[in-house]
Length: 131
Image (cartoon, rainbow, N blue to C red; front, side, top):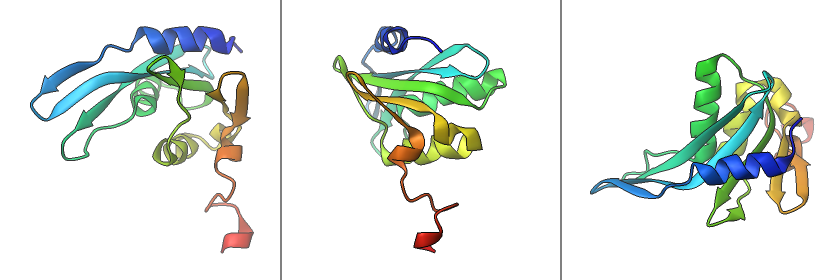
């Protein structure tokens, strides 16, 4: 495992807000994740007027998948210099890439790390109480 400090630095380093077109902008959120292969992957958000963009976590995960990995050991997203917990869509997305990702360590606030399963307490695939 790497220190979350390194992931925060790398997520912050990819932030570069910019207008892509009249209807799209990118780079206001940065994400860094440590994959099972020991490599840190990064990504940024892309926002579009018709909601077809994606979060920075999706960008980092895509880079990881492209490189051949799918298990995330640690992850963090940064916006405006602050730690940003993953949205519900990202939580679900990450959980479906690899079953082991429910154990992913997620930095949700300064000094606060929780597992992805703690962020998804009623997993539709496994929680019998909601069926």
